Image 1 (tube, rainbow, N blue to C red):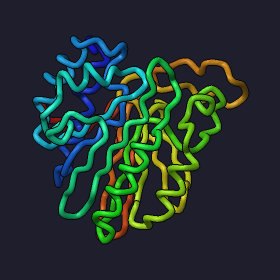
Image 2: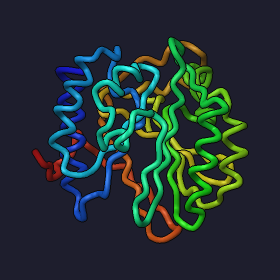
Image 3: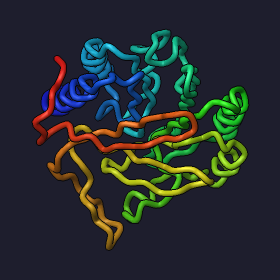
Length: 243
């Protein structure tokens, strides 16, 4: 990560932490780097070091989880551990991060061990609203190219989510554009990219390509068991920014 992508992430973080009241945390749903080179994570850590609120990371298909752990292991960015699937308990919400990374493949898969972890993590605080966070969408988005590389074990995840009605959102990335869909009794929200967005190619399975549309991020407001999600512009907006 360098140049314009790094500047765009800095701009988005600056916009997020300037919101009043300040968010409790930031979750970045993967594709933290382009190639997964260790130098990219060094740059990322420099950027995140300016963020005054906790940040929680997970790998996407463009990442190298081993390089990620090497740079962020045993830090709050990975919940003070060395696993890319983990749980963070806040007083009003539980954040469950589940790695759907598959070596050298663009699609995602949680697998039995991560699925069991998600089930157990959700069972520990059944009375507290929970976010389940992963990179790959568990539902088709209507963009054929992206739907071919979504989460492969979505049905297994859905069975787990259905057993835990306190899951108020499933937060994902991967698609590089904003979208939402119902899944297993809750709402999947797809975060946009802070750099380039995927083109809205709905008619065939060709690579959508990337376009310089305005960047944004999602802000989730939790009030008890209610959750409202806002799309907040980061670029092309006359808004107050930190940094």
